[in-house]
Length: 192
Image (cartoon, rainbow, N blue to C red; front, top):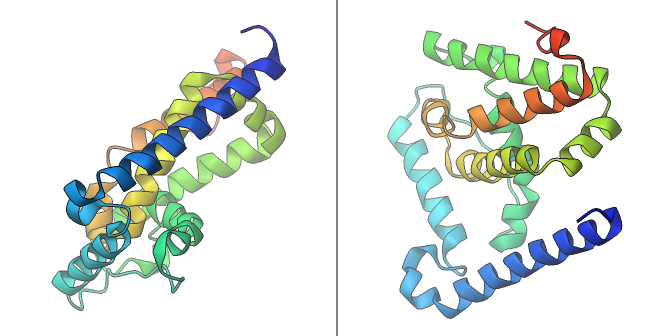
């Protein structure tokens, strides 16, 4: 669709349609979904988080997102904290074990390339690039949705480092594609 305004309206309409359809599906088939129904999903996430925290004991690798209200609104309020936990934590000073320190170095690398992209390319130009390319949009949408689910339900950096593996390549690819679209190919990886 060559017209940007029309393309934006269709994209918004499609995303709204998908969100409404998902909500209606979860309400309609809520009894069949059991603990994953829209009414029970937050309780299931809380139970999973509690169990991972309990099973890890006092190993020093537990984390908390802080308190937020219950229900879907509480989950949405913790979205930024869950994303930060998934991609940018543990911080180096939170590492109590060598394996957690390696995870902290990985998180530090992701924070560095993200900040480097935002400072060199700029937020506006990066957002325009993401908005214009469906491949980059897919990478970031998948990484953020998956990252939220992992960060919200895990309560332990060890479990987090295993569960977040599927979303890290998509996040890294989104960053690299955004960088590549705004810089010449010979300077694709100036931060390595």
